[in-house]
Amino acid sequence: MSLILPLVVFITVTGAYSEYVVPPTRLRPAPYPEWAHYHWLANCHCSFSKLLLCRVWLSNDRASQASMTQYAQQYLDHGIKVGAVDIDSGWSTGFNNFIFDAEKYPNATTMVDFFHSKDIKIILWATSMIDTDSTNYDEANSKGYLIRDVLGKEAVFSWWHGKGGLLDYTNPDAVDWWHHQMDKALVYGIDGWKCDGTDPYILELILPLGKRGIVTRKQYSDAYYGDFFNYTRKQRGNETLIMSRPADGFGPIFLDFSPHYVMYSGWVGDDDPTFDGLESALKSYLQSAWANFANFGSDIGGYRSGSGSLGRTKELFIRWAQLGAFSPLMENGGNMEHRPWKFDTTNQTLDIYRNWFLTS
Ligand SMILES: *[C@@H]1O[C@H](CO)[C@@H](O)[C@H](O)[C@H]1NC(C)=O
Ligand SMILES: *[C@@H]1O[C@H](CO)[C@@H](O)[C@H](O)[C@H]1NC(C)=O
Ligand SMILES: *[C@@H]1O[C@H](CO)[C@@H](O)[C@H](O)[C@H]1NC(C)=O
Ligand SMILES: *[C@@H]1O[C@H](CO)[C@@H](O)[C@H](O)[C@H]1NC(C)=O
Image (cartoon, rainbow, N blue to C red):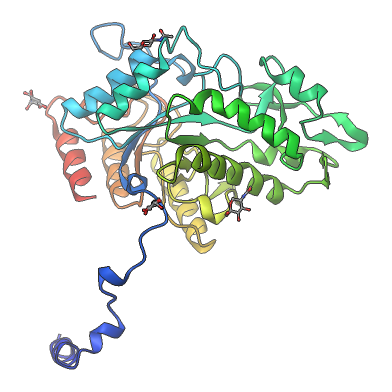
């Protein structure tokens, strides 16, 4: 303390601070839109059929236009602003054909307009994997738009949403075709994508072959996330964003997923709804920071389903909300209950969440 005061006086009197503190007017504007730092909601996993009470836990594949709009509206009604909503997997008629499932999402125009009227951006889940039972698989496969295995063999991967092939980003015709697929959703005026992690599946092939020869995992990841980011900006302007992984771990092994230039609103992947899961998220934060990634967060309360009727404890949820508020992206999503007003009957969790939200 005794040294600090003279130092402050010295710096102030001599103007030496200008060497250390850059006035805001001299800072370059951020190369990304501000909503990268707003409060985001990811997919909703519950049924709202019974008077908006969450009675039945549903997989994200069952979310719908009605449930997603109601979900966001509930946050607004509880005084918590929502900057963006992620509609997670299951919105399309096939993985990944980019065609809205009209049974769950009867009018995408109305939905996008609803969110935009509330100043909420909307992003859609996507990956680079086209399922064999998706309407666009046969065309992609027959035209040679998919990554092949040794000797040009068709490469079908078993992943968490079925079986599919990976788009070949080294083939310009494939990329053009893919852009037309993406346009089917972009025309509704969506603001970006949650690009989930299918890129590591390429490691399963002995010799992953693209049109231009062997493709490494890192080349594949760079092309996948980079193309989603660039093409969406090209079509919908520089106010768009994608959500993708910076570094994320598989046990002790960490992979760098995205290229750095897309990492404005990332998340560190799927974690357990426990304090071990919170620790695991923090390890991914550190690995991501060490790998020079900026601007990411984690699913508040953890992604996976846990025990108990809510899937996570009140204490864990509150601690994770505090972490989220101090993360560049405060993002709340994952399986089972994540709504702050559902963790007690006294509004304590809600009040804490709202306070941290306002602080963030
Ligand atoms: C987007 O482009 C406009 C016009 O060139 C520019 O004024 C704005 O700062 C850019 N925004 C971002 C986020 O880069
Ligand atoms: C969606 O809603 C808009 C506005 O109400 C309407 O003009 C349009 O025809 C609807 N589209 C479909 C496919 O129902
Ligand atoms: C995206 O655009 C950037 C900047 O224009 C470029 O450096 C990068 O190679 C592009 N990425 C892809 C995958 O096309
Ligand atoms: C909780 O907050 C809501 C408003 O968000 C209010 O209507 C309700 O009475 C509060 N409940 C308690 C127990 O304070």
